[in-house]
Image (cartoon, rainbow, N blue to C red; front, side):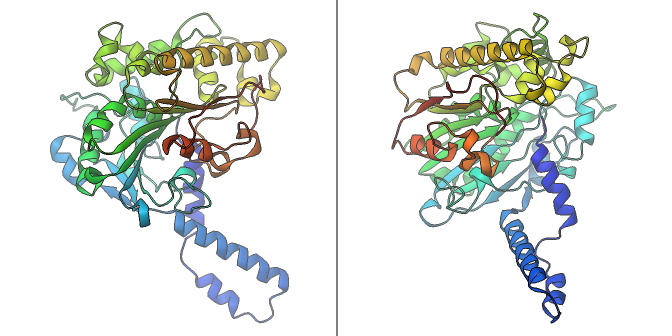
Length: 421
């Protein structure tokens, strides 16, 4: 579940060297350039300037190594911080980056060697600040001038778990909880301890972490602060796959065991059921006391591919084309997708029953996009027509909910099949 968009941006960044205008200086000296070329140069210059504004330096916490708060390979944890300004200087948006999970020694070693840095800070590229992270008011009207922080993902277990022993044969460190703690300690010193408002967000496995740590995040901040949580594509549901089995549940169980994640899961859940089940938001959200706004697609592409129709359940490879593009799905497969949507909505509502008449505590924006993570993508966040609900974009609905201008729980009931957004 790595951030493919981020990976593509990183590749592009390797081709375009931002803020270097040697080429432009040469171009401007060429008097024989045509009108067309001048327009093209202007467009390129605008793109370069946009690239510059989106880049925020990575901070590596070298001091965390002594505390054992390290990535899978033992490298220091990292974050990116774009400082707030104006009336947003004392407001904070903390985002937990996604990156998938590793449930075995073999898969965690693969994480360490991935070029997108989800297992090692040595390989991290800068995260592009767009969508909910943008510093432009037109792109991010609710939070543009806040302190916007990306906790970089490199532990393979949604920032949970803490295993002291390190196998010298692999040098793998399972220390996600320590990473969360040291980054929070660092940010509190930088001003988060005086925050008037704070929003904890996250994408995918980071979205799950935003749910798991929501109350802890609230407890770390002043009682006078307005604190809420908004997971994006982090609401994974517990259900059978196309074979009638729970292959994904076995995956979650292995993650929790390998990383010793039980110690960071809510005891209100682990005291009643197996720890692996407590990775599912529907079993922990009812007990969370902090306001939560769930952003998700009822046709989340990752969940369709890995919970509904994982490779283990698709022995004859009948679902590959459908999962790649829902336009390729058969009628029977579309019916299975629709059933998944119904189960998703049912699970979400059951997890919110305690607050179903109080949407200041529980808000939601559930569209039908066949996608995964939407707040960091400018078009989806600000309002690609297909991603809107009631003609409102995620940016508008989330801002209204946070500032309590409008208490909204929106679910797309108009489109019963997945949409391309």
